[in-house]
Length: 114
Ligand SMILES: [Mg+2]
View 1 (cartoon, rainbow, N blue to C red):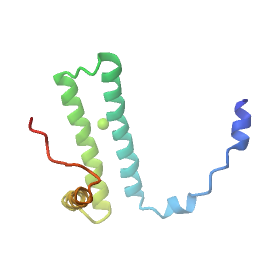
View 2: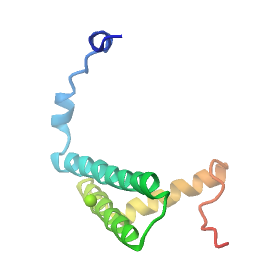
View 3: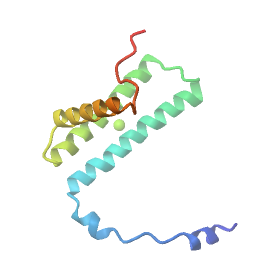
């Protein structure tokens, strides 16, 4: 298959420009930043798995915690753009997890102390 065949068969993207324009630009910035930070974490973990058989150093742990902080910053900022807070996000998440646990769709979200 030639790549042009793929491209010709690929439906063109719908014009979302009006929808994009209607989104709060600061919220959009936060969501893009959040995805970027999550990608950084995923790539970092991938490299630990690929290059060092998953062996994590204290420095790796520190870097991961710093990246999680970056994620937290974007989550907090996005919540504020939605006139909410980290507290409300956490409360809503706990509620969702409790409901899933009650339905049996997750076994437990309690930490294994073993
Ligand atoms: Mg970062």
